[in-house]
Length: 242
Image (cartoon, rainbow, N blue to C red; front, top):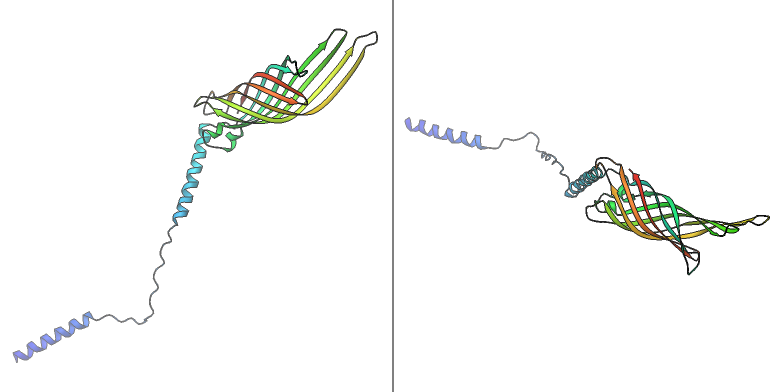
């Protein structure tokens, strides 16, 4: 009897263990689709976003360090040598005004290249009188030139050396007067194509680096080529900008 009870107990335990280890059947055998993986941004997208961020940051810092837009106005004066013939020239007082746009400060952000380029719209005038009290000639010269320039900054200083060349118009107004018993006066006017070349030094000084206002100093030697003449002007100027 005892032997039978032991046999029944062992058989029941083995059957129960096999039942517990068996896989649990599902009512639907359709496989479960895997969960979608979270889409990771591509490395190229990450790099492009980083570049855009750094570029924006760089431009913002450049504008903070130098908030000026590079627009300035100055007046200047000096000696203008008029080539009245191929063998002679006469120095005359000349005055003028100039509008300058340092366009590299508007469009460029690198510390060096922001100071490298500008363009001038310049007007100069001089007047000459030759002859005697009885017969004399008055000649007025007007120079109107648009000239781009390349500037070479001198280290970290506000000074720079520049070279320049441009085109414009030369206006001539000449009057001949003869004071005889019956005075006679004759005038001649003309407009001619003008070429300009030159070089000089300029300074861009900011009293307050956090503000756009700045002061401009400039000295230069400029040549004007028109018809057969090559006039030379040595001048200095002063102005303000923002």
